[in-house]
Length: 422
Image (cartoon, rainbow, N blue to C red; front, side, top):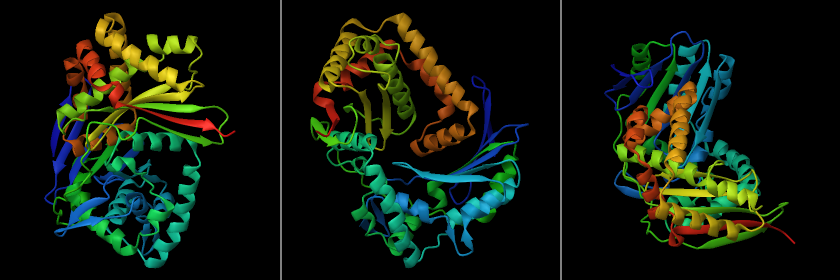
């Protein structure tokens, strides 16, 4: 395995690409009792249309999440229970462009890793178990659809995007999951749960070579072909300027979203992530001039916040919370963007935000889970997340001002509201 030491953050990473295409990453943590393993595939809620064996498949919305639930089924029983018996704390999640299975443990690490690699790589579905899961996941979907936070975000995404599969809820709908069969699950597993489309990341006091040898021994020898995917051709315009729904809420809620220009994979992807996060903090952070002004005017409260997000082919910045006058907040956000573009960003405030953002990235290395997920996302998007100090060095306050000016424009903005029922 190749070792690389990152002097500015004091971390080492061992990497190896196995003959079957699997990327293995190990971050040694000598002296720590806990060990963390993360096994992920570049397959998530957005991957509903793809090409397999020369033909395009249109799969039901929510199938990646559904498959995640069913992967724990084995011929012998349930992998979750087996891991728990060994003292591990296992779980899994499905995101828009990734599905990850993981556990942490202080003992029986090798046994637990073997279980993890085995059940994720060897699917076992029956029509009966698939049908039973529809009721369970259908109940989950009904619960989240009654959640105003979920509604306001989903409706914002549907207003921002015309065709991108990011418009689709990761869980799907009750109707869409009713079309999932054991056959479609096997097709999706065959397409995406191949070693060449996956990465194993381990963080802890382990032998990197031994981890790679275990993966080499347990996983299939063949890696699988690259799978073409169709995320939809997305224009720069938004699909709708605003959306509003009445629900059983105590006070009005809102999200203002801006459709940003995405970056291609590679270090530009990491740079845009850093740039977008800093722009978000400078514009919307709780020490920003805009936040303090809106708070003093009573237009927002402590629920107000924002974030910058990236997915395959898209990027967006959004902010929101509780407000009785969401339109006024949206107007003030746009005014502040115009002011920053015209006057520039105060140097002292920029340096304050930059130090805080850099420190947040550095503190993230204290979390085994954060390390593993960051390395996974970096691998899937072609960049090295541990190079963030060098990327920070290239970002200037003029870059942040240009990002705000170019992306946070009225024609790229949508307003999503949830209002109380009469």
